[in-house]
Image (cartoon, rainbow, N blue to C red):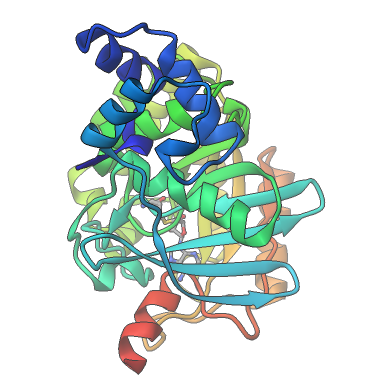
Length: 342
Ligand code: SAH
């Protein structure tokens, strides 16, 4: 049975209309699910018995199963089980401005980036909108907090699961739904050009982050197989057009890998590549993975020097704060480690 949490409000309205019921029932159901956070259809006390029966016959309202979690001062990681036994991670980061949840969008990932733990497991399947929505609802319930920001930077490539991700954003952003503002939602992609073009037509001011990680094709080809399909100059060209069309906020993510992409020449080349674009660069300290034989973290001095070079050349740049990395597994590793221990 399909989960009730898969439905955008519009799709739920269509369902009710098809069943000869009033469209406004979708809004009532939404309020019970997302404002009052009930766990069963029976609890929807202003909805008629017949409608409740209709809901029970057509939809499930099940939650994800919490398998394990890990906490540090400023971060909590959750491993959830899906109804088919697959497992996904969600990571809650505590910022001074609020709580931000890093959401997974797929079971596994087919992009195969060499520095990334997620790619160790090839894509098994897309996550449904409900499986993304429930990551938010359940973390809020477990931690007893309100999440103010969402980043689609967990396991998976959001633009390789485009339609479900768009439904998810619509559910989360709906004022009658979870009601997180579009400017507080960030989708991160390794650069699937056709989907970036499609996304420029989406009607919400959602932020886009691009995992760039290199200033040229030579280095990017080695790190990210997707660059062979969508080379860097085409990607940047598409993004310039994207900014012109949407005026939305754009970030470039750049993992600092020792002696791979962190030289002064790389910084100058990157500054040149991004010159004149209304965007900023987020430098990310590398989290160690099972591929540590290939990559080492750039040291602080090198990251600072890279930062300075970009700044001097007119690029907006920040360095990503590291969350509890001393005791915590890095991205994608809670699941990986859990599987190994079992
Ligand atoms: N597929 C999407 C979203 C998932 S990855 C994308 O490529 O953007 C989210 C971010 O985490 C990306 O910028 C990714 O490159 C980064 N990341 C992956 N492995 C990492 C590691 N070992 N250390 C630091 N960042 C990593």
